[in-house]
Length: 94
Image (cartoon, rainbow, N blue to C red):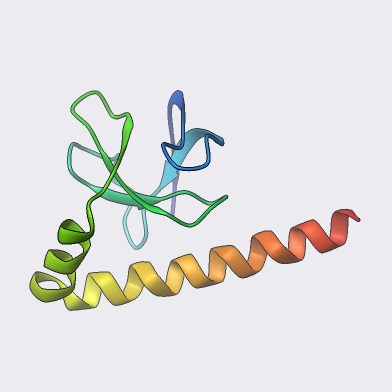
């Protein structure tokens, strides 16, 4: 996995600053409509034309579950692991 730097932008949900994306299973930079998630709040997001982040509608998530169930399962698993990591990181810093 390789990190891809991007112009800093805020998560549309929690407003955390995000400035990089890491591909899962590939080293390709993100493009429009690729899926991602916020490491801080765990919300699913998608990239825009200018590689900024936008919120997703529940209908998009539902569509992903149907058309790409394997990718959806991977995203949910990664979100769970990321949230567990962030919780552990908070505990270590206290």
